[in-house]
Length: 115
Length: 125
Image 1: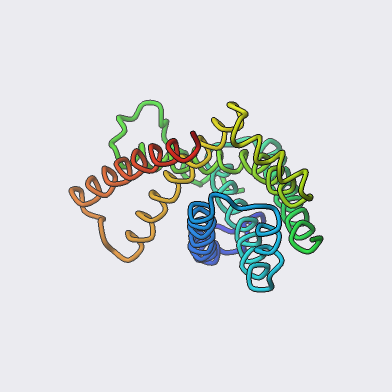
Image 2 (image 1 turned 45 degrees about the vertical axis):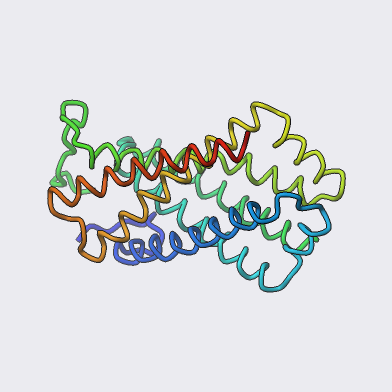
């Protein structure tokens, strides 16, 4: 068995499942946002703010945000282990991805709860 | 790490069938979307900042041609990533794994992406 310490769930099977569950959540969220914007082409600030102010939308958005972090990490981790052969380069890339996803997650939380 | 691990074959010397082109494009579109997050997060931040920020985000999407192109590009990348991802999920359930059905599924991803790219273009412009 190949063991890695930088995978997301410490096991390939866990990563496999997380990648699929997060994909479904992100797909549903993307469809929701596209349909919402198509149905409300004249959306104004008040309506936009009200949408993201609601508890259900905050839960939905946070779910998508956390899924995004996991999904990006697992996807880019897989890519880095396939193409970046040099340990230092691969590790630096993985740390950068991790840092960026951490920043996006905190930024997203602040946007959703700072309203 | 153990040096008994298998060495990757040289991908550059392969003749790539459609399914493998879709597979690598799925990865590329994922990277594109990841890079695009900085644009999307800034736009989202702007839109929730207040009346003024919302108006400038709107102006950006309605009048700024570079922002419109980036938006279209990201929607197209999302359309492809979504379609190829759906193919993945369907294959997880054991469908489309034979040579012919896999090829058809790959073709379906291409058709679906072209349609979504055109729709995204109509929407943005």
